[in-house]
Image (cartoon, rainbow, N blue to C red; front, side, top):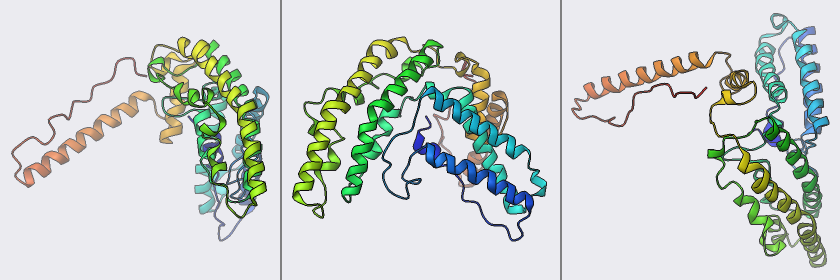
Length: 323
């Protein structure tokens, strides 16, 4: 999945051309405006100049619609710029940046936010990055407490989005999600706040903070975890076990999702940066495997190796119903 930290981290630092022209200036203005909006919308350490964010992104439907509108307008502005009129450096920046914005807009258009989890990551587990950050001073601790206080709202918005995805059959495959509720249960069913990962940063508060302040910060964290965070994980766990996991889609093929073929094509663009049909991607893969096998055979012949170094090198056949 693409977490908000990942999305916020893919901005570009554009190089300054030797001779900037009007087209360069227009491109810089478009990209700077969008990047400023992105930093404000998706809180991260980068957008906070190395400091912990003090709140989590707004995942409401209204916010999702605003993201789509912003990236759609950004694409229109980019389309109004002729790449041939850009300096060589900016032409390269334009190509990379436009592909990024197309990927972000596609994710909104296909409503990826209704499926904020997969087999190895999820919106709740991604937050563990923050929970494991050391708190260097009282400012860090205050920002951590503020972020923690925002967690129930963030969870509830993601649950609402997942309900919408569930209703239209846009969920991860059931076979990939076995046991994904355990990381939620570890906090929802914790014996005390001190047993949760959210309390860990407060155990190691630096001695540059007075003993009284350290005690007060720990007491505030304890109450926040007990009264708000553990209940939020409890609501998420109940939703996952009762409503979500039992009703996940059975198939694994991308075409099984709503508008699945178009969605899969968009994923190809996102992960390969080229716009080719799945069949062509598969053909390229087969050709590359054949090339590698020929190279292996040539090396074996060159070193006079008489055995078989690749007995498990299975032939690559198309997987039925995988696209």
